[in-house]
Amino acid sequence: MSASMQNAPSREDFAALLEESFQQNEVAEGAVVKGKVVAIEKDVAVIDIGAKTEGRVALKEFMGPGRDEPISIGSEVEVYVDRVENALGEAVISREKARREESWVKLEKAFEANERVSGMIFNQVKGGYTVDLDGAVAFLPRSQVDIRPVRDVTPLMGVPQPFQILKMDRRRGNIVVSRRTVLEESRAEQRSELVANLEEGQVIEGVVKNITEYGAFVDLGGIDGLLHVTDMAWRRVNHPSEVVQIGQSVKVKIIKINHETHRISLGIKQLLADPWEGIAARYPVNARFKGRVTNITDYGAFVELEPGIEGLIHVSEMSWTKKNVHPGKIVSTSQEVEVQILEVDPIKRRISLGLKQTLQNPWDAFAEAHPVGSEVEGEVKNKTEFGLFIGLEGDVDGMVHLSDLDWNRPGEQVIEEFKKGDMVRAQVLDVDVDKERISLGIKQLAGDPFADAGEIRKGQVVTCEVTEVKDSGIEVKIVDTDLGTFIRRAELARDRGDQRPERFAPGEKLDARVTQFDRKARRVQLSIKALEMAEEKEAIAQFGSTDSGASLGDILGAALKAREKK
Image (tube, rainbow, N blue to C red; front, side):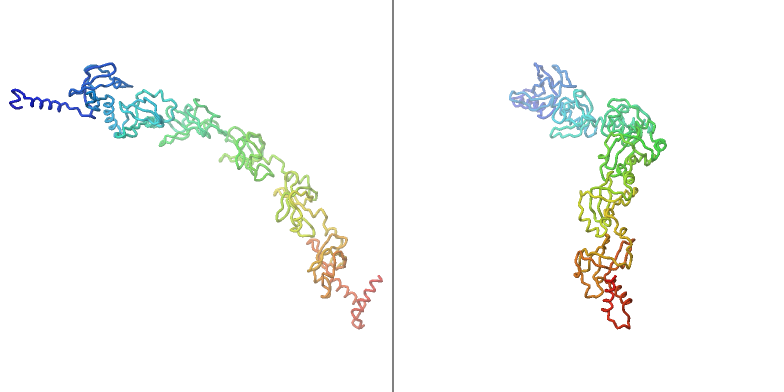
């Protein structure tokens, strides 16, 4: 200090000292500074932050859940300086912001170190809740409150508890925390310890905690195990609620433990006797039992024979006659049915059942009621390229092959005369029960023309009636029989000039010689030419000789006169 100032400070010296004093006590806006409570007026505290500057802070900023700060005149507190001087000449300060700034520093360190922080849920907002982290306000999403959805968060509010910081953005002032993460970590530690004390095969008591469509979760004392619906009972269980209820205490057996995922599989049926033991002796093949239909699928129906024992009636074993029909149209759930044991496999735990075997085979019944040769009547159900299907009694079908439609006409032609829905009569030709086939014949009802043809033989002369004239020959029927045949053009006369079909007319009668007659092959052939040649040969033998000099006309004339005299 200068000598002049030591003796008598001048006006300038005083101003310099005052300025130096102000610089030493200058308060920066946006900073946290220490201040002293100089007065308390109603609901505010007057705080001196130095540099002859005072500010007012609402008393409520010193109070709050878990952070009550008792203050009195002379107490030192930290405050945040918003403005050094306002219109009233006072500093604008805040205890709340000071605490928040202090908290942000601590929280950032905890976030970087991945450490938990303590806080309290104090309000509910859209999508979650607000948490007070010692002055800093954080957002707790609804999904991060607990491991499972919590209906009422009220018991958790206002209670100090640990949280994990998921996200921090100081520029925006955003903090996102999770309570669920803390619980999961604690639970994982607890689960590891509990799982280490459990063994597969161990029987343990538990409480049913939750029920789903596929099973129930059982609390084993801090760790849950899954009791799958298939392990609840040996019988079929449609829903877990049929066996257990929430809150029920149950004794379970540990089936499997996954030490990596800490998943535990439980079972109740494993504590009961296995009903499949000695199954083959209790259900011998071909024996019949009554059971209840428990489930119906596209491929068959399951029948419960006793609790824990089910067999399958495959769709192919449900009905003798109903093919390609859904099992649900033959049986219904809960229906009691009689079944026959077809096969028992104790290793695969499968029993094959038959429903149709308990009913009379309709082909057996038909064969008994309609022996071969009997006459039946039915409706044309279908026409195919090889015949007609006729619906018969007993819900079975018989088939009339094309070859059994008519004796004389081709089946392809005759089948066009029938249509679906026609009622027709037929004769039973054969019943094959094993192949489930019934052969019918329509032409057999009219009798067999070959069987009724009498003693027709090869070489015999028969009288025929023309039924149809064609370019290639004529269709004829042997008189007094139902035998029909075709005489080819070349067989119509000996002389080529007379081999003209148009010489004949339908209804005209003529004689012909039988050139082939085979009952087994069902073939008959006639020839006018053969008859004329045979007659000529016979005439020459009787009335002419090579020496007489008589002409063929003279000989045939004599033969005709001889025939007329007879």
